[in-house]
Amino acid sequence: MSLEFDLLAQRLEKGRQIRALGFEPYGRRFDFTHTLGEIRRRFGASSAEHLQPRVEVRVCGRVHTIRHMGRAGFAHLLQEGERLQIYVRVDAVAERDFKLFQMLEPGDIIGAEGYLFRTRTGELTVHVERLEFLAKTLLSMPEKWHGLEDIETRYRQRYLDLIANPDVRAVFITRSRIIASLRRQLEQRGFLEVETPMMQPLYGGAAARPFMTRHNALGIDLYLRIAPELYLKRLIVGGFDRVYEINRNFRNEGISTQHNPEFTMLEFYQAYTDYRGLMDLSEELLRQVALEAVGSTEVNYQGHRLDFSRLARYSMREAVIEFWQGPERPALDDVRDPGWLSRHSVKATPGEALVDIFERVVEPQLLQPTIIYDFPVETSPLARSKEDDPGFVERFEIIAAGMEIANAYSELNDPQEQRRRFDAQLRLRASGDEEAHQMDEDFLRALCYGMPPTGGEGIGIDRLTMLLTNSASIREVILFPLLRPEGPLGLADRLRELDR
Image (cartoon, rainbow, N blue to C red):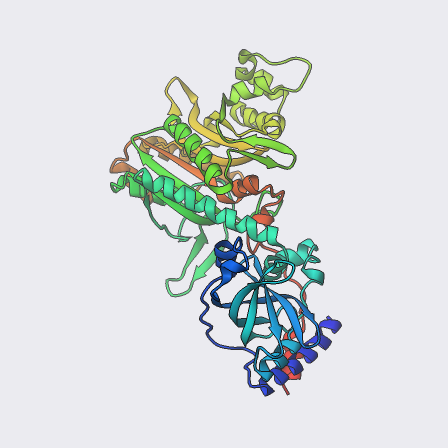
């Protein structure tokens, strides 16, 4: 930091010199006529002759590079990922404007007024007639603006990462397109976007540990939501037959390449359908979001070609048989046999053992987007049981590149059965399972008024973005991922010192 502190003093002094010229080091509003991207799109193919009569422009941006050539000079401005060259000549601008140009440094933010022309090398350029100063940078940009490679620095100083690395900017533009596509597709199908509480007196809707906070005025503990599910199903009871929420969830869990304690989900519920109806809908949603976000249903992810045009489908039992790795492939009777399951897993119940085997053996092999359906009832306390196999529920997950990206089921709407499932979860909590569900009496009351047959699904926005942008870590697709606090920077003390 010592070099940065020295630079602070130099840059603050430069700011005072800029003020002495009659400019404010931190300027005010600048009315531009075009963004840099608009200029490149509209005039990028225009010849020098086609730029006559003069095309006058007012542009602004961050100084990317600068070349001083005595009585003239060039600079490149950067704005929203686009670059454009400007040319400043001593006899074309006011004296103070040329002095300002000579004092510019990479990272400074300026406005420029002039007209477009082509240089001798053919580069589209603004011939500047007037400069305005908009903001002084006090710290140095990464070396050549391509030197920000340290992972911790990139995540901690995302603002610098976005300036220095154009590919990072592209990831978050794609993320925005993904969300916009999902929202548009659902609204075209008659879904209503809603908002549900992020602070809840009871947490539920998923098996996870919550974050807890305190409401002082009411004197109660509240939990940051781990899922919006139970509130969205209350809305189905209330007569909103198709609802969705693009929501932030919070789970008090570890951090990994696939997990961040704060993450984004799309969760939607549709009355009068079931999990098979949602399978078809999910296939359509994912195919279209890939097309709209990246222009193709096929994407490269970490060396694998993923195809979102069609999703393979297996029951969980079928998947264990299909992807078994061992000398003897099991038969359907084997994966139904509690004895066979107990020989291949230490879990307490046959259902838990099947899920354990699936997660260890099968899930890492599922590279192509795949639907896995029919889960054991023990692991799905909110899903409707299968009519012909009560030990299993009408639930599916979508898995791609070994990651779960969606979870859905036919919702349980029998209040007595839901009460029995909650009771079973309470027994698990009593035995030490901190992620087991609590008893939500108000949700039971809502079910007692009658909830129509319903299908519900959650799609992980962060993981879907990982797949569609070829990002190996969830931190690459979250603008400000959670990090351990860094030590004191001393920056405020140094600024305070230099202010004396």
